[in-house]
Length: 201
Image (cartoon, rainbow, N blue to C red; front, side):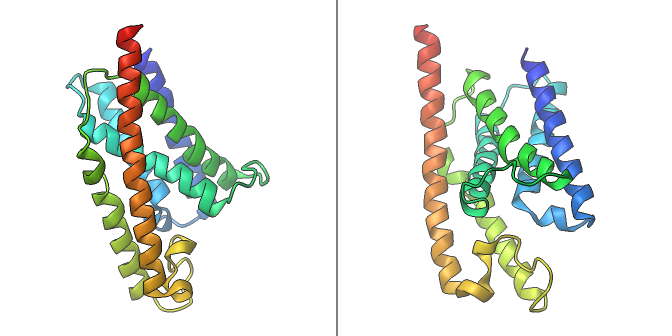
């Protein structure tokens, strides 16, 4: 059951990535996106879990899960702003739906349902912020190096220094970091609640 679920998760992520790559028609630009990077992490992590019998790392699994949750929530509330994800059709829309909705939900299900013995400590929530912070630095340096007006100079509108300035982007980044920290703590709390429910059941 676990291997079937994870195999489906990998296939869904690969399908979403393929749709995104084909629709964008740019072999390099998708690699800049947090969405693509987080789903590539998913494929790598769960691909290894399917073929390997090594004990899982709760910290690594939690990090991958958090990044996918971030992917879904940021897309829905900051990019789509609650709009219907089915308003637009086509390969890119399908890729967006798979990578922003399906894989995050499936990853959370896996986080809550499987690997009962792997339990991260609360400090892990802070360590999981290392990658989002590194991504922010990467996105800002990349944007600064590209000429003004370059296509997709900043991968996400809320990182657009030309519009918000470095001060504005810094405030947004701090707010997002605090939100991500709470999300990480929430994932850990939900995992512990699920473990207790399983033991009591």
